[in-house]
Length: 357
Image (cartoon, rainbow, N blue to C red; front, side, top):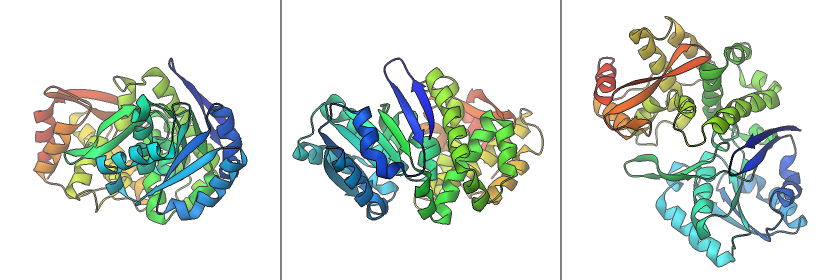
């Protein structure tokens, strides 16, 4: 089993990576949440039928009382209405402050369950059991939890670190190609912003089969890179902002598709290429970087260019959480493996993007 420790001032927790962890979940949660009698497990309509039985058996064998709450799969469940339903169901179950919430699923489930855990009874323990590649390498680590508003994604949320993160790479075998590729966008992002050697490692494994052949190493590398950033900047005011490479523009593409046409990973993929091209125009990024990133993304059938209007760009830039007043820090690449923030007026960034339409 590969293990990483996230040491924060308020809380330390472990990320554990190993095949078969779903069947050992009860044992691991008993150690992480020794006072808990009840576990409220949130899953979705795709993951529940696949894994609920195995996880429930393990948790009950460890002496926990469990309640499973299933939401519809998809981004539409990450909303205030579903959050309110979770709160009421938790109270119906008799959840107390010594009990815990478990997220069994992808990023939507993790964000929704985590925000519910952060706010119910002013905060209870929270365990992540991510089942998608995107959730395993990115959203399950770092404590960002949120729901969407009509104005945009993740605009109501909290920082609420988990008590434990359990990753079973065997769950990735049930993902369809689009969902696996979604996660690969975030995997490739880590190489772009922090680790040129890791990026070259991925270029040498340009297929799902090849990546899965080294999947535990891939998960460990991505989580280790994020772990180090979270320890240094838990509240996303400095270095952690680099993790948003491709995301400012990606949010514009998600908005352009009404949050239904383009997945988060697809939007981030196109956003990384556009950000690299923007950096090239500004003289920050070496020429040809955008094309190199596009080539690797293309190996996983990820889009490298998504139609977008000036209004969509303006809306995404205006709502971006890296903004401060009239300025924004856009994340650019000085080279593959080295990202930097570039502060500029929001109006300037919007104008630069409009020139590319």
